[in-house]
Length: 503
Image 1 (cartoon, one colour):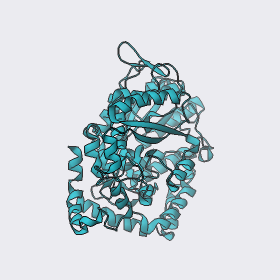
Image 2 (image 1 turned 90 degrees about the horizontal axis):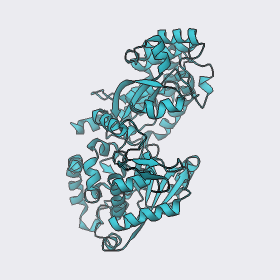
Image 3 (image 1 turned 60 degrees about the horizontal axis):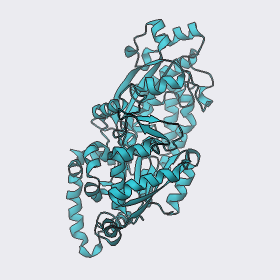
C-alpha cells in the first residue's frame, strides 16, 4: 500500500519512542499533549467502546461542517436520501452544516477556539498547521489504511505528504486539481487578428512588444488587473508554511536554499517588466487600489486546465478564448492543502468519520449526491449515464467535499476535464519541500512583522507602480530590521535537517 511506504521512515523512529514510553502511558509520552489526545480517540482506539458499538450495529451520528452558500433549500429531503445510503453502507447518520462564504472565517474560528461539537470540518492551508498546534484535530495517521482502503489506493503518495506535519497526518486532502497549473488566457479574436503564436509568449518578458501594439491599436490596457497584479510569479517558490511571498525555496532547487524571493533573478526580471509596462501605460492606472477585476481581459493568467477555456474562462468573459500553459505544473504543500477535511480530536467516531470520507470520495453515487445535490430535484441521470442539472441552486462547492475523479460527467461537458486534471496531477513536478512544514514557533512575532512590511509594498510592487531597483533593497532593509535574517536562518536550519533525513 502507498501509505505504508510513506510512513515507513516515521514509524521506525517512533518505535523507539514507544518502547521508552512504556505500556502504561496509553501512547502519550507527555511531550505532545495534542498527539496524546488524538491517540486517546484515534490511532490506538479501534477497539474502544464508542467505535466498537458503532461497528456492531449502532448508527454513528456524525456532523460535517462545510463551506458554501448556506444550507440548501432542500436540505431535509437531500440529507434523508444521503442517510438512507450511508446508514446501509457504513452505519453513519450524517448532518451537514453549510457556512456561507462571508461568515466562514469568523464562524470557523469560533468553532475551533470554543471546542464546539463537530466531527469533520473543511479547511485549507491557511489554518491547518495552527489548528494542529492548538490540538484541534485528531491524529489519523494510524487509522487511514484500515478505514480508507479505496481512497488510500486512489490517493497519490505525494498528496499524503502534502498534509503531513512532523511525520503525522491530521487531515484528508481532497484529490482534485492538487497541483497548480497556470495558463495564459487570450482573447481568441485578438490572437487571430494579429496571428499571435501564444505558445512563444508565455514568458512575461516576451509580451512587451505585443502589448505595446495592442495598446496603440485598441486604446485599452493589455494588462488590466486588480491589486494582486502578477501574483503568479511566486508560484515557483514554495513558501514552506511561512505564509509570505517574500520567503521561500524554489520548487526545483535541489540545494533547497531559503531565500528572499524578490532578489531572485526570475522574480526581479518580472518585477522590472511590470514596472516597464506601468511606465508605458500598459497597465490600468488604478490597479494598485482595485479590489475587483473586470470581466474582459485581452490577456491574463489563471490557474486551471486546458478545457477551462471552454467551460469557464471563455463563458465568464463572454468571449472565445485560447490558452497556453505557463511553466510546470507544481505539487507542493500549499497546492495540496487547498482543500482538506479534518476530524475533531473530540469526535466519538474517528474511524466512522474516515469511513464516511472514504465513501464520499470513492463511491460515485454518494459523490454525485454531494456534488450535484438531490437526484430528481437538482439533477437527474441521462440515458447514457451522464448527469443533467435541473437547476443551479445547489449550495455546496464540489472542491470542498471530495475527489473530482469519481464525479459523473455532466451532459453539457464536451471535454473530459476530469481526465485533464488527473493528467496534470500525474505530470506535476513535486516541490523539493513537499512534506516539509516550517515550525515558526521561535520566530512567530518576527514573521508576523515581516509579513506586514511586505503587505505595505505588495500591491504597488506587483502592479508596477514601484521601481524594483529602488524598492526591493529598501524592503529588504526594513525586513532585516524586523529580524528577517533570523527567520531565514531558522528556516534553513530546519530545511537542511529535512533534506538530510529525506536522502
